[in-house]
Image 1 (cartoon, rainbow over the protein chains, first blue to last red):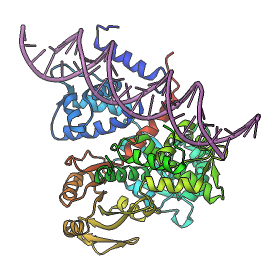
Image 2 (image 1 turned 30 degrees about the horizontal axis):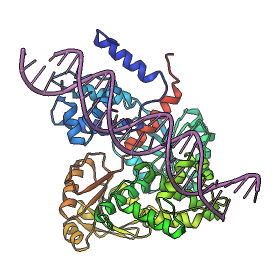
Image 3 (image 1 turned 90 degrees about the vertical axis):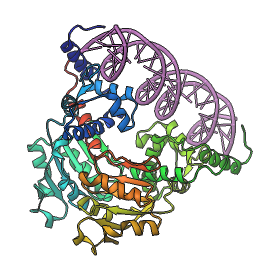
Image 4 (image 1 turned 180 degrees about the vertical axis):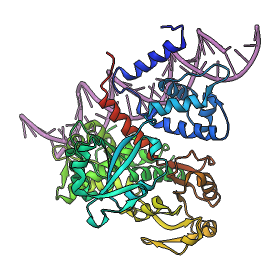
Length: 233
Length: 233
DNA sequence: TAGATTGTTAATCGATTAACAATC
DNA sequence: TAGATTGTTAATCGATTAACAATC
């Protein structure tokens, strides 16, 4: 397959990315935000071009890997000069849908929920927390950052009226499943779950678990692997 | 290879797990905490035995996978009856070093750092935050949960004196690299990094990034994949 | 042109899944 | 014993890495 014009290739790549289902490798999806972060730092430093080899070197990824990942986002570089940083940034933004927002409801205004509401740069990552809810009625009426805290009773009607697709779950583990059920019953189609609990939801609902303890376990494991350099030969 | 006695096999498995370096598949390491969480829920519900097939079913993992993962932790089940839940729990605890604690220092007592200090069940996951630090001197002297907040100046001397190996980094992105440098200079060998920044550290230092935005990106991506069911055929 | 860099096709590696023998 | 379940060995699948042709 050979294409004479740059624009043709671009369109084809785009079609191939959207046609046959998901099929974007998860590892690629995980690396893209890291590329984005590094590229925007380079841009802030005034740099305009970058080579895949350079990114690979700094980020500790194989250079072929970087090229493949970038190709998936649909952008192209030029031999000898490399990639335009601003083009890469917009390509990644578009690919990750960071150029638009999904409205989200958060349930569980404890310290973790509060931290998320105050977390900077959230809206740049494609989501916006438009309202928060808590089982404790005394929290209703609060305003954390820009986000109002509402009583639980309003959750379903508001979620339906506003067609909320994303729920952020920061309640204690004991309440996690009940909260997930409420979200599902209110039409929410994707749950970002911070409770260390395996949620039981219908097939059509997406759950993404943010597993703090898993991440910590990986860290401690790596640490003990390097400390204890293999007792037996 | 065939072993007549149960105890022989156990010892061999243990040796094989510790001899030839890391070599524990990362995906396995990621799944173990999920197994653990589900198993402890079963135990609380009074159940004593479980089959790999059942765990596989509930957790959405292939049953062979579950068996391999459990085998890595060094525990054995019995045909017909399955595994003793309590044995599995202690095996996973031991394997992930959740039966002992690593002392950790936290830097950055913002809302996220505070949330971590208040997070329940932390010590059960193998780490204990023994002190927190912040660049804002007015925060020194506070006590959050059980953890004292100390002035930055004390970081290095205390870390060295207490042989602290783990640093938790919850400062804003701008301060992340400088904080990492401080940690490395104070003898810390593993950094749990919550800032969305690629830290530059010496080879012997382990960095585990907890990437909030990556997790969110995966969620939003999956969501849009299911919503827009392939425009072109 | 020569050299650097891209993007693609082929080879390798590792994790997952399938098939099956062992055993209570 | 028959059946259920384990644990292991072989086959498949997908991601990473290597090799190389294309091009500015």
